[in-house]
Length: 189
Length: 189
DNA sequence: AAAATCATTTGCCATTTGGCAAAAAGCGAT
DNA sequence: ATCGCTTTTTGCCAAATGGCAAATGATTTT
Image (cartoon, rainbow over all chains, first blue to last red; front, side, top):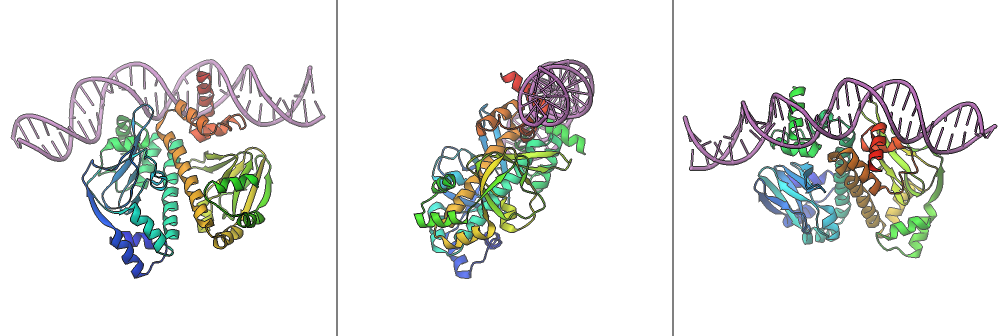
């Protein structure tokens, strides 16, 4: 919980009572490697925060290929905004790639807090805005770079991920085949 | 102005007085083709809305190549959030690709309105969230598709853009060369 | 330790895309 | 219609990446 408190205090100030109220609504959740935190076709009812572990967000494209859209590692928020805000079916899976420790807020509690705690709405909006901007800034440049550069970018963005998950997920994130990635790594060393 | 009012009313309700106040702060702006709405290295001081025309957001990558990150066409908001919110230097150029008619709010007026109009902050956050989500959803899938598919995706996302701007900008957006794009188009027809 | 399972690397060849430069096509001004 | 400029297409060949399958390496289970 400490981690989450630190995280939100980066975006604004809250007094101890407010923090206590927020904490009181948080639930601890552990997920085993390979299990899903949320699934496509379901409606998102939770906001999560990764205390330990790595997850990925993925989906299946037109050709049925499984695509990893991004990774989520420690001290990051996990929420499918489109589904959570509009209560429509999610189009993505969120899967644990390692055993994970998370804290979770139910949608009801989350919305209650938004109405109850003065200033919390502004903080949440700052957080969401930053999370979304980060997604754009991280993924967008990959489109126009060659495979080697994309891999180097991945290493910069997720320095703590590469040795903890299978190569195939990285390849899927970068839009190249696993064998190409393997050769690229050989050339870099 | 009508267009902007319609746009914001999609995200929440405002009464005529509130709309009038918002309108009173808006300035009309026309930009000639090829001119810049905002530039890298400067601090964003304006929120814009495209009434007519097409702009692009672009930057220069490590290799000095000019990359088009996305296009902005009619009835869309133009704001460099990172720069506008944090008052830091922008890292991107926003350039008109056709003559453009826009409406513009100064940062000061924009922030005043946020404080003055009850409910406006929530609407703005919904708008920003949607704009950012749209950027992710549009650009992210390009990473993992081949050039032909990327071009077809571009056509779906920006159906009114392709015939109004030079091919080279589209190629830059898709991360392929202009000649490859030309060949791809030949194969599709 | 051996077997079974999973992850990574490699070989071979096909396909896609890039690089460069020239030709062709389109467009506006005169 | 013609000139000058910009945009798009094409040709040629090189480089990058994909597809598939087998080999190697690592990890877990028995």
